[in-house]
Amino acid sequence: MRYEKEVVGRDAIADLPPVKAQQRNVEQRNAMRSTGLLLRDIGIAVIVLVLILQFYKPTIVFEHSMEDTLHPEDYVFLSKKAFVFGEIKSGDIVVFESKLLDERGSPKSLIKRVIGLPGDTMEVKDDGVYRNGVRLNEPYVKGEITPGVMAPVKVPEDSYFVLGDNRKVSMDSRTSEVGFVMSEKIKGKVIFRLFPLSTAGVIQ
Image (cartoon, rainbow, N blue to C red; front, side, top):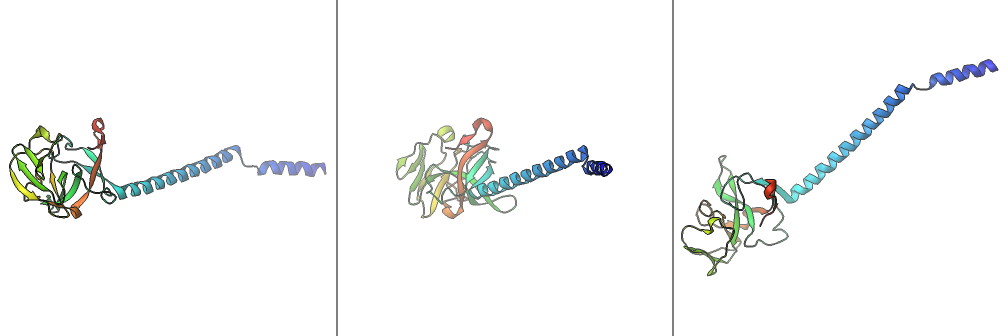
């Protein structure tokens, strides 16, 4: 009986996994757990990104027509739903699909400031822009100059009169190439500048 107990004891000890094997199993379980957590976090990040992109769109400024408010290579965010929940107002900076064509022959997107609303009468004189006979105070205009003279025109229904802040170089509603912008062509409102970091913040 004593001999049998000793044999059983030796066999039980022999069946135990080695210490290195135990460590390896623990490391494998930890690696699988870490991988699972990483995949979960990536999945959540993708879902959040998709949801964000339903409402916002990153856009890069390429031209000088909105200086000094926006500059080339500024990285801004466009609110695609801004005008679903609210109305377009004078002073809003918008991105819209213009009648101009880009180098690929596709409609060119422009960034301009809304100045005239449907039904407004717009006029450009030597001393500035007039809306419904009242001269506008426009501190955002580069050099405070709007070149040229434009006879009074009435903004059609469901359309908008837009101008660039850098009026000397901007092609906007003063020209037949751009003209009035129909609401269906407006892609959204520029609300935030992300880059450069020195000027990051809400766009006015």
